[in-house]
Image 1 (cartoon, rainbow, N blue to C red):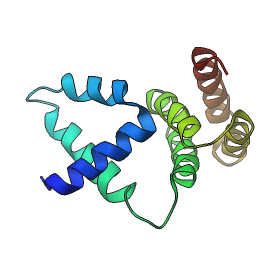
Image 2 (cartoon, helix red, strand yellow; image 1 turned 60 degrees about the vertical axis):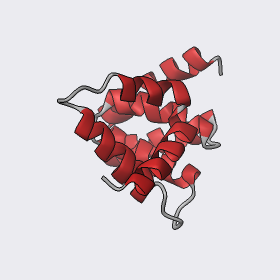
Image 3 (cartoon, rainbow, N blue to C red; image 1 turned 90 degrees about the vertical axis):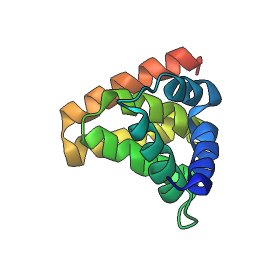
Length: 125
């Protein structure tokens, strides 16, 4: 593991997903899934999200679209919260999921809208 990249990724991951979420994910890691938590933090958050080519808001837009297309409801929920933290608003998230519905299928859009609505309710927005 690259400790510097892990620490960079940890800071980015916490800024997007929140300290509580990340701390809980890392604290619940055991011998079986700890390598996955390390990989996610170092590679996804440190290497990919830590690159300068795109800002966090743009990366959130891409993630919401990809996760919707892949039908990953848990990750959509996490990344809707992250998108809000990265400056997206409900209208922008709606537009992402409308485009998902057109290009990836209405069921993917419907599920994404449902999940986002749950998150907005939980967040009081």
